[in-house]
Structures are given as structure tokens and as C-alpha cells.
Length: 469
Image 1 (cartoon, rainbow, N blue to C red):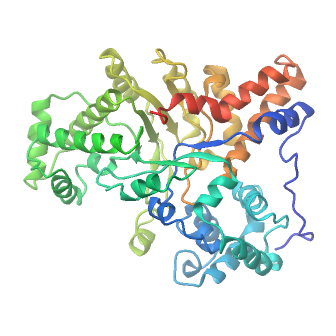
Image 2: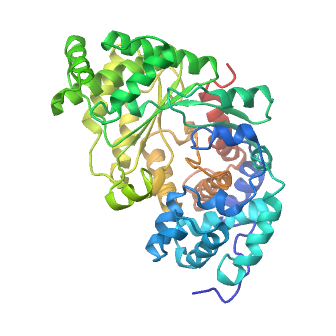
């Protein structure tokens, strides 16, 4: 299947339906710098700063969005995650692109082609070879730093394991990149005490901090050593990716016993697992407050559901889904406990289940205070970061919170070519507000709303995070 015309559709006014929307985007949003405070880019590749070289590598390696679309289109796995050549994989993606129409991948693909390569053609089989050659010619001379600067990326926050040496971040800092590249503390492996690799991970943590972990006290002391190390290397954000929050009543003595039991390679009861997790969550959250970090919680995914593909490829094969867990009660207990003790850090939550939009939006308002926008309901995430999902998030936040204090978009991506997602969000934001202006549901005041748009796109995030410290 192909489009009869290969002419592009990403015009100057793409997604902008009214005069007010166009003015907001072109005069206020378009040229704002980017603070990408959550992504999965490789610090090693950023530090090496070698030419990206091949668009198939940049686009398809590890991109579970595209992998899912290609599988849905019947593409053989060897052309997705297998050993086919880059050109073969790219051409199979080009065959799939026309079938992604109305999927955000169709918009993202062509925004990226236009933004980075000035290519204004629709990617499809008849244009694949030409686009592959043209893009690769540019990428052969384009480094990650060049790509950051092309999109005015001011800050990039990668996602990093607590045991990471941060050597690549240190090299980046020494090279004086124009874009600030900072780590994010992601301790998921400490959370899943029942996992078969947990004991090996604890042993590696012991080696890293040069101290034996034999009980709860030594575990928490070891973790704080890593928090301190991350902080010294510019980290100001933590993150957790969880199916749901486990919040149970516990005592330190109980959790000490549970941890020792696990260190002795004994099997834990479900309630013991939940008590340990609750203790770890609260202990970490209090550390984040102590160091004035922002804590992020990505909630609601069911991961690695296809055992066959997990066996073939490993984790993160593109077989994740939206979960059904309702997080409201757990969030009340978790955030309420921290707030009562006055140890609640600035917090961003993200929900994957759209039926919980209102739950998350109202929950974050329960613990607001001290700092404008302290408790953030984050941008539409993962399966929801498309036009419909973003519009619903913007509308729900407007109805139940303060859109004006929102810290805006992030890429959550593994690709150096994903930064036009900020443009995508900005166009959608300007269209929603511009349409309200023209319809008379808000005052027709371009300067006021222009400033509001700039705050959401850039200034709110700049003020919210402590990157300058």
C-alpha cells in the first residue's frame, strides 16, 4: 500500500487549526529551548559523540513503538530485532509506515524526517531507498551533540542504575557540552526483592560501596552512599517504573527480618515482599527529600507479557501493555505518610491507564504546597503520548489542577532523533489553547497565553528542577 503522492504533509501550520493557535505556536512556542528531563538515551554514546551514521540504528534499534507496529504488519522478526541488515530493516519499516496512518508513529516519523533532514516526502517503499541514502549522508557527519543543538536541547536527563559508575557523564561534563547531560537515579532492581537476580545485585552493591550488606541498616546506608555519589555528579531526579505501588504497614524490625531471610536464600511470602517494598519506597523518598531531588513514578504498565519473545530477545521486547491496577489508595497512604512527616519531595506521577487520568490529577492536588506546581501529574506517557492522549491530559489537568504550572513534555525515548516530540506537544498545546481563545471560552489575550505557553514549554521545568545547583 502506498500514497499516490509522495509530497509531505508537515506544513508550517501542522495541527494548528485557528489563527490564535498559529500565533501562539509561531510567535511563542516554536523557538523555546528543550529541557528533556526523562529519556533513555545512552550516556556512553553521548560521551563518545561519534556520528550517528545510520538512520536504521537511530530509529529501529530498541524502539518498541516501531517494533510493535512492524509485528502488527506481519514483518518477520529478523527484520525487527534480528540479524537482517540495516537497509533491509529500514525498508521493512518503510513498508509499514503507510499502514501506521492515524498512529502517532506516522506523525513522529515525518516530523523527524523534516526536522533533521529537510525531507518532505512520505516514507513508503517507493521513497525508501532515496530517503535512506539522504538521511545517512547527513548522519555520517552528525554527532549526538549536533542533534541536541539542532533542536535547542538545553538539558538531557538519562535513566541510570544506582550501580552505574557515571564515568560517561563525567566525560561529558569534562568535554563542556553545550547541552547539559545529567543522570537520573532509577533503583527498580532494589525494589523487586523476589527477583532471581536480587541477591547478585545486592552483592554488586556491596562491592560498589565497599561494605557488607547484612541487614536493613547496612542496605539503606549503602543506598544513600550511591544517592550521595549521584548527587555529586549532577543528579537531581529519581525515577521508578512500577506496575503499581505496594504500600503496607511495616516495622523496621519486620523488614530487617524479611531482608535477612532473603539474604539466606529463603522464599518470601507475598505480604513480606510488600512490606519490604513499602519500606524501601518510603526510605528512598525521604532521601530524595533530604537531597532536594524530584521523584518520578511511572505507574501502571504490565511488562514483558510475551514469554516467547522475552526468551528470544530479552526484556523490553515491545510486549508491554496497560494495566488495570487502581493506584489511588496506595498513593494516599504513600504521599500522605511523607506529607505528614514533612518529607515529601517534589513529585511527578505518570499513569499508563487513561481511565485513571482524573484519579492522578486530583491525587496530586491533595499534597500541593510550598513550591508552585510541587506535585505534578506528568505528561501523557507511553501509549498515551499521542494527539488524543495529550489533549485529554491537557484538558483534565486544566479542569482539576493548574495547567499554567505544568512542566510540559519529555521524550522518554532511546533515540537521538526523538526531540521533535516536543514540537508535536507544543503544536497540540497551542492548538488547544488557541481554539479556546477563538471560541471565547478564555480571554482573547495573545500575550498572556503566549507567556503561559512558554512557561509550559520551558520556564516551568527550568524553575522546577535544581539543575543550576
